[in-house]
Length: 104
Image 1 (cartoon, helix red, strand yellow):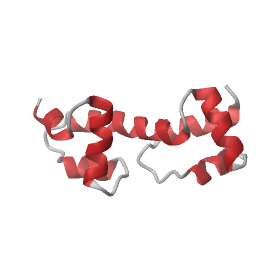
Image 2: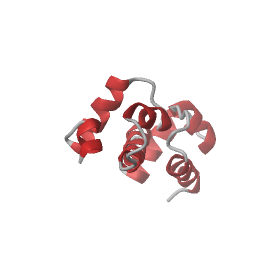
Image 3: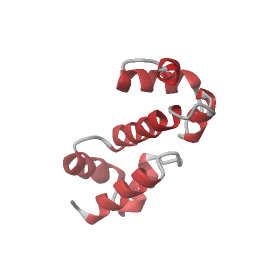
Image 4: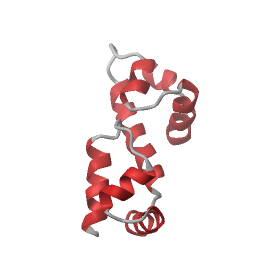
């Protein structure tokens, strides 16, 4: 994998909760936004934003296992501001809402 793309993948994997934008990821890779998006997709197999969302949902699924952490706290810890958007993304990945995952 191109080391510039690897740097961004590592950044996302280590801190999916941080505020990552397409522009900031492209700057980290020292590429233009359009070149970065194209190169990331060809190297990783997903768009940068899709990869970021998947990393956040993996983190959310892990956090939901903790009985003492509320769903709102999970949402905030993964870097999202909207409850409805968090629920939408989580359902898309896991085919169930975070509240059901929290109970199971």
